[in-house]
Image (cartoon, rainbow, N blue to C red; front, side):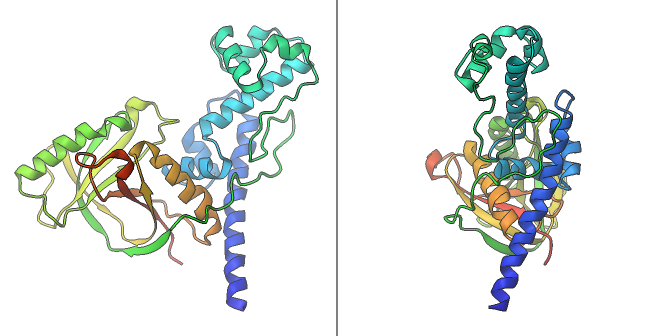
Length: 309
């Protein structure tokens, strides 16, 4: 019984650890809503590496960073409409919309009314429903938030201790949905060199958040395991994926929905796991290929690096 209680306590401590760090970020966002919000600064406030931050944020808050900021600005705009005489055009610009039309469309989608209609019905709620309970508050800091969802009990997360893996890689810079071209070029080269065999593992490392980083600047490494004899050449480099403990979750389905599994693993399972992340990137091992597999049948093992216990 004592061991069980200690296990529960460790999980509660970890959840509190991540919630406290994200709360710092939520306070900072509310206090700097009109300023550029650099991912690196927000990740630093959360004591998380930038490549982990967006998955933890999305999983715990139930919305991406960009969606969160956009929603708060719309809620503030609704408050301005209710309690001030500010012209709608000024409110639109303050909410970071370049035109009155774009603001009106977004506002109607969020509140079901045009800005003018909302102003007339000044008792209408100025909040958009969100599981976290975090809303725009004038001159008041967020005090706490609710984790967006309870842990999905159907998640089959396993913890593995991996040895370091030496990989050849080719870096792709650009939209993630175009990495297939990089993989094609990369595997063609390795195949000609006789470096693809039955024991080769195909691995992907995404370095950026496409919701924050411009699509033409997102970075992805297409990797294949190689032995110690392989040497870098031209666009193909060599790196070592660190060994250690990893939380592993298998993603079933198209690559376009990988972010949903990342959010579950890092935003739902991790904060309740009693474990903390290491400051090294996650990676994916592809168990089959879209060349001969339907999107719904693709299998991908997501690996999140954990600090040693």
